[in-house]
Length: 194
Length: 85
Image (cartoon, rainbow over all chains, first blue to last red; front, side, top):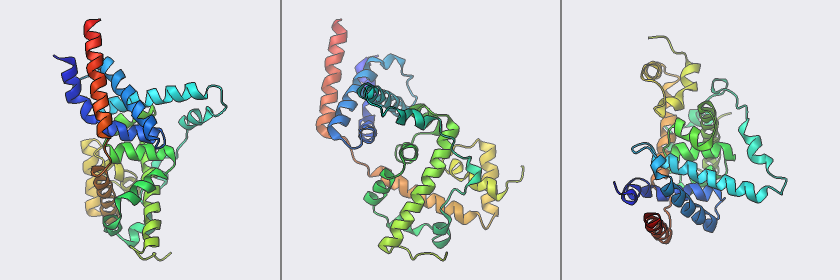
């Protein structure tokens, strides 16, 4: 089997997704994201024998991309004192899902059919997603925008599946709250009774 | 089939919609939502929210064509380099 041809068939179709993922990692810096994409595909191609055909090429590429990014950043910051950010993030004790409601209830009660979601402009939604705290944002993006499973997200982000669940749970709820606030401001929905 | 209560159904709402529950568990949760007048609207609302995100996902930006071309060239160069080595 021709290596390049199988790589082109399975990995290359994920270029758009990897680019978007890289853009988020670099905080929107397009040139850095493009470098990251090139490096990711080069490494992935060299390691193509380690990929199991038919499994998720997308999450495999995301994992490589994130590892390259993290290693680069670590190198850059080794002499700075800002390294703690990444490390501090990982041991977060997110409360268990059952102690919180999944939905932003004032919005759900006021608009049970979720009409506001039909009228919302895509750009506003993407902006609201970008404003989520990074841990929650990453989980929401990988699940809702990139379609990865919980297990795939866990492996991309290097966190347990339980943490994926709680970050998704809280991230989606936060996003609903934010979109509701926006919809009220823009007059899509009337503010609910308290 | 064991009884599922509102709290449990709501706590699993996203796992249910994401298809991340085992088949039997998903059936129990579905049965609760179909039966419970208080929970059913929550399911509808959460589903509308996720449909919105799926719509956004379909319209996401793509990589620049020029990057696509560069990656393709890079791979061909790597292929011929490793082919000779």
